[in-house]
Image 1 (tube, rainbow, N blue to C red):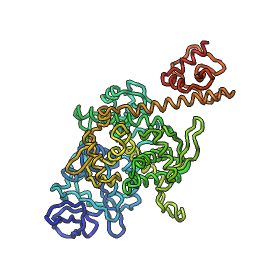
Image 2: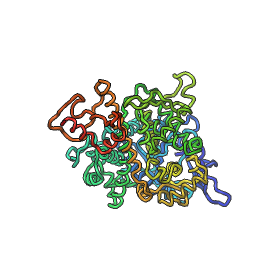
Image 3: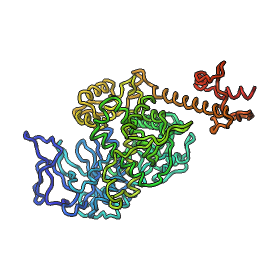
Image 4: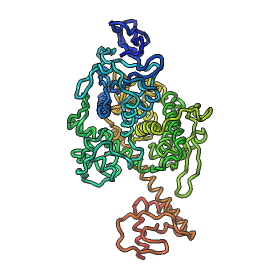
Length: 625
């Protein structure tokens, strides 16, 4: 099984304990005596650097992460079974995740990078490092010991393969291409309207409330499709966009084939599904429904869906987004020196998210739209945009004009230098499908980042931006305070103070391994306790009222100038039986703008009409007169 003359051995501490994650010592691979400490094998040979093994490492260090890794394992195992490829599934340790091994027949690293990107866009718990490192990439093989005293254990189940299949290189490049194509079939669509069901559907199932055609297909996916977890969440997102309530989705989860994920869970052995405990099933449905609701509003407000004109531009955008996320991780100090820096990083992340979604470096976004996406007040967003422009992180291509929002361009300051130096024909551009795989993974990371901080509890009246940055830096896996401080860019003392406040409000957990987020999201409950619940919703309503007032005023100035308004008002009532008209237009036209005794516009009175939803009443009274 070993393609090199040695294996890598962990070095014990002076007192004999095993605390290191490194394997600096070599042990001869020839001979019957195995190393006395944990050891790994390299996945490539030391001559051509070709991969002779693929190891999908599914991390699971917490109960919640274990459930996610188990679901990903089911997706991966079913995919390999459909492809007819031999594979070995191992539980990596007593408390660890899973290793899925494939015997390869000398696969180059370029193919493995495509595999890693395609799998990473689908499997959220996948650690891609071992699929692309052709120099030092190494993994503990089946049967090898772990530093906690357990072993990497081969798992039994239906249609499983014995470990002996790993001694025969049998998976060739064409097989890997089929696996990559299967992952890309499961890749989530950027726009929910373009979601395609991966797997057969049952047209006999009908939803009890209306849904768009693509969402009906998601609900009809037999067994939840090839990826029940992803398909179930897309069903929730579609239901949230359609205005369903939790009672509606709870009713659908009882019978809808596409929501199988909320009735059963994947078993680690053989990829079979077993019934969930009712309490756990409801808790999972509540948790993911809350996440779907948080993003439903954002996706409705930002509807830019233009197709990329040139993949070269999309490549640059994705590269910049990857570099920005990496900069936030490895050198976050620039974005956490002061409170204004924290706001700047959130606003920049929102603009980059819009650019990646639309495939255009120029994005149309009003200050209020960015405020809704980030959960930051519009006045603060305005100041952040000015600072980012001054620092040349973004540039304003077009100022706001009338009802049209400003156009912003994300700079290429984060892009790596080798993409812009030298002749273009020598650069190794990603193939189009691989680019879309990376784009999906980058979007997921950006949405996770924005979603973590977009909450009432992190507003000024709540726990504030420092607590927000600390919470964003946490994950479901525990981490040491020094690691979190480095990731967040906050000084250690300031970070610990923020973590202590978060723990006092039951938002984070402190364990022997470090700090992590709670498995259940209590942010809404804490916001209610602090008296800040509904702040973001009220802001969003205020922004909507301000947009309506501005559109009304533009229509008024256009009418008084003797021209017809370009935009018609959306009526506040249902169907009109008798449609009347006057010089302003028909029933859907804007009413006359309120004016005082001096014939000056009364904006305060106009806002009161807008907030009261009385524009249609005003228009009806005008027509009746």
